[in-house]
Image (cartoon, rainbow, N blue to C red; front, side, top):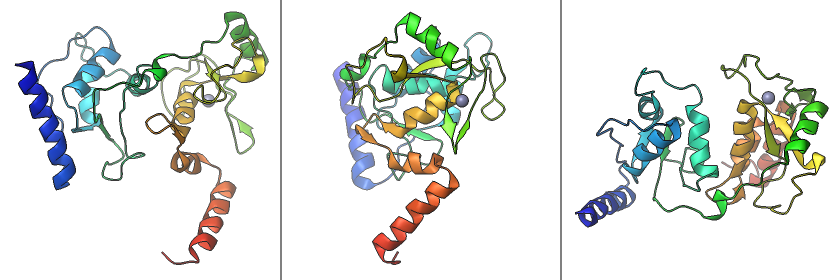
Length: 234
Ligand SMILES: [Zn+2]
């Protein structure tokens, strides 16, 4: 019986590719799993090859008892990619997806992604001290500076600082977990921004996300470069 289910799912994925039509995800049951991540994972695995919307993900992420949408659902979605090695595509990877749409093309997982480098506890305490217990993200020469427990004025939610390995571990797997300089303290919003710079589905830098987050002057430099590259032709 499970064989038939797999076949049906595979053929709907193929249909979506060959005909160019988008097969939309559906919420066919109640997701009562303990954790937010478990509920989102189960929903995606039920909808392989189908386009899921932000509203659908928020709906399945809801606490089954209170009905509340968790404020950190997007981070849990990122963890399915980075910690568990699932491929979840978004508009950054595929042109036919809109900004609030996501798609898991296969249930296969990348094994390497499951192993994440952990900072040494003592090192993390020293990084926090160096950071003055504030987010160290820098943009246009300004430091984010949000403190643990603050309310993030842009992203909403309570700020929690977590360690970020400055270089993607795929590039630098042997970095010393005790090397202070290899780590920085980041707030949740900037962890997500940073993660978007690195495309875990392709293993390449996500140039589009980097340019999008770049300061105005950098954007203009890229724009001038592209103009001269294309000789002003579209
Ligand atoms: Zn920040």
